[in-house]
Length: 295
Image 1 (cartoon, rainbow, N blue to C red):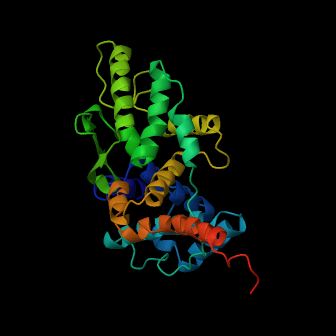
Image 2 (spheres, one colour; image 1 turned 180 degrees about the vertical axis):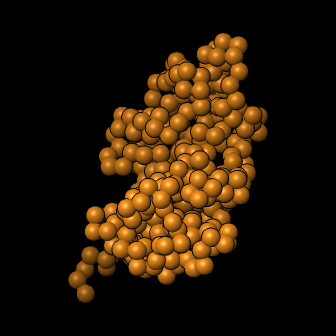
Image 3 (cartoon, rainbow, N blue to C red; image 1 turned 60 degrees about the horizontal axis):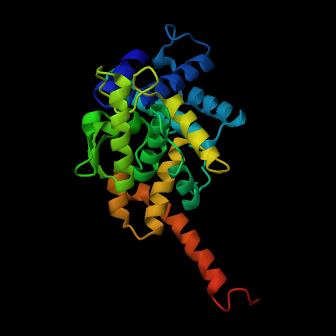
C-alpha cells in the first residue's frame, strides 16, 4: 500500500517527486521500527501505542522536533488515506502528541554578501549557470524544486517575468529585476551554443545537457555563498528567506511577498515580519536617548 500511497500523492495531491520520496522514506523507517519488511507490513495491526513508541524513539535519538513532527504528519496522511480506502477503521496516528518546536527566526544572508556573489565573474556556460542559480533563488524567491522545473518557455525576457509551477501544481507569475533578466539573456545565448543545435526543455542544465538535480543546486549554492563570505547556513532555502526578508526591510507589503513566494496563507509569510521587527528593535535601542539608562 505504500507504493499506491506514493502514486496517490503524485497523481491526486500533485506533490513533487522529492516530497513523495520523503514520505516514502518516513513510512519505510516506521515499518523498519516495527520489525517488518514492506511486504510483511500490516497497517491494520498498528496501534496508537506503537506510533507513540516510534515517536519517543525518534525524540530520544536526538532528531529535531520539526523533523519528528514531519514524520508524524506523514503517518497521519498515510493512515487517513487507508481509512478512506476502507483498509483500516481508525487512524492510529490521529491523537499522537507532537513535540513542541522552538520558534526560530529564518536565517538570511546580508545584502552585502548578495552583492558579492552577484558580481562573481562568469564567462563560460557553467559559471554563468551557477551564477544564474543563486541569482534566481535570491531575486525571485522560488523554491529549489521550482528552479529545477523551470523550462525555457517559462521565461519572458520581454515582460521580465517567470512562470513558476509551485506546490500542488499551482502556477504563478513572478517579476524579475533587470539585472537578472540580463543574466538570463546572456545564459540563454550561451546555452544555445552549448547545446549546438540540440534541444532541451529545461532552462538550467547540467554539463551533460540534462535537467539539474537537488545535489547540484545545493553544491552550487554552498560554494557561491562560501566564496561570498557567508558564514553559517549555506543552502538554497536560505536565499528564499533572504528574498523575503530583504523585500520586507525595503518596504514591500506582506501580501505581495506572499503571492511571490507561493504561500497559500499570509500566516506562513508573517514569520519574516519577526526579522524586520528585530531590526526595528535594534535601531530603537541604539537611537532612543533613554534606551541605555537604568530604570
